[in-house]
Amino acid sequence: MTLAEDRVWMERAIDLSRKCPPAEGAFSVGAIIVSADGEELAHGYSRETDAHVHAEESALAKLPGDDPRLSGATIYSTLEPCSERRSRPLTCTQLILRSPIRRVVIAWREPSLLVADCIGVEMLLGSGAEVVELAEVADAARAVNAHLLK
Image (cartoon, rainbow, N blue to C red; front, side):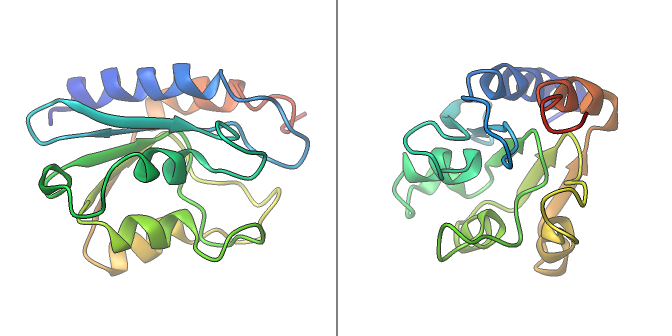
């Protein structure tokens, strides 16, 4: 993917994050999984199917784990994938690492507002994944979370 393509997909993920029912104590996040040839495979957003589902989790759940298109795919998330979680046994970072996806594009890193030290990016990099942070769209992703970032 080119940087221009990454920006287009991230803008779509930001649009998805606007669908999230706002919640105190939870970020509104959008995620899209895109194949190596540029086809959208799945998307999700926070609280899409229940009060605790995260965007990456929702998108990944829509595809079989052995889908051959996941090899070489990119997951776009408007926020760094979580590395700590109380509501589910696996974090979004762990779910991504259990999949064949090895390229992750984020808009911004999770601030230490709800989790003291999110290390999703570090865990992904440490496992050999490529992580791209699109800082130029971070303000748009943060704006969706203005209810938390007062």
